[in-house]
Length: 428
Image (cartoon, rainbow, N blue to C red):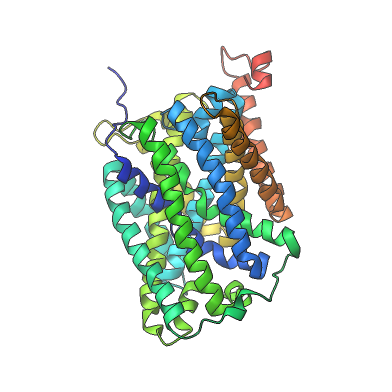
């Protein structure tokens, strides 16, 4: 009997919404404070830099998704274009980085629901959303559509309160330079803000569940990215005009502070609810994407084969989703929000570095133009990753090295494998 597979039932609108659900909320409710702390009034420049790198990565992702319309994202692209070692590095970076992102989003949810004790509601959110993902991607897409609408409503309330409450001051756009001087601070802030844009990978991981993926995915990725950039820019300008960079960096809930700064403080509860909804939406989409990448890696025996199981009724990788829920719950109990964001950014930037290298190998029309885009994306990923705090960089390299080393050991003891062959050593 054939193994049950995934079903192509998502259209362009569903794919865009899932991408929005993966991005909207992370940058606004979790990343702006740490980014302002690093860059100060250079926050807007950092946002533009992060968006540029994200655009290059999105273009490379879209081309690869059209050429290889399968679940797994750059894990699959790396294997097909560069070889198994590179594919594993991308997949491992995605899984560990996005697992840290899940913990960050769960803690953000908990902070907006119960500021004095965020861990219990964070755990509840992880358990409930794991159950939603186990019921099937169609239900995930429907619920994400509602969450995105509520998030956009809350962000509109932030902009309205900030600009309409009388506290906006153009002098707040300059002044304090942040904790890290010059372009180093801008680069570090851009690396943190990249965490907010990385959700477009969620679309690429749906290659086996999107109708006409060769057309749908390349359209959905830039559409979702463009919408999110416009929203982030509007909120960032409002926050800086209202609070200024130093107060923005110091606030644990900066968007609530924006709403409270003027005469429209009655909108603060709307923003608090919006923060919780946004974090839940991102968490929901992230967990679904990690499950699909884990499924693809398990099919290739890069992770335990038991994780390749697809539920015969709901057609989802249920074992991968359940294991992920357990891991995220454990991280919520021990992790720090800012540390989780930094680690996630490093791992995901590594993932996209492999994406751009893989995209470089593609042919077709306008090859030179797309190669230039891939080169800018690769250099941008490496620059932003290296700009993160030294401890974050060391931790990220260590975790990636453990994954690659563990793979080599497992293959050395697996019957029939030849890990020391020239092709394996070269990654091809």
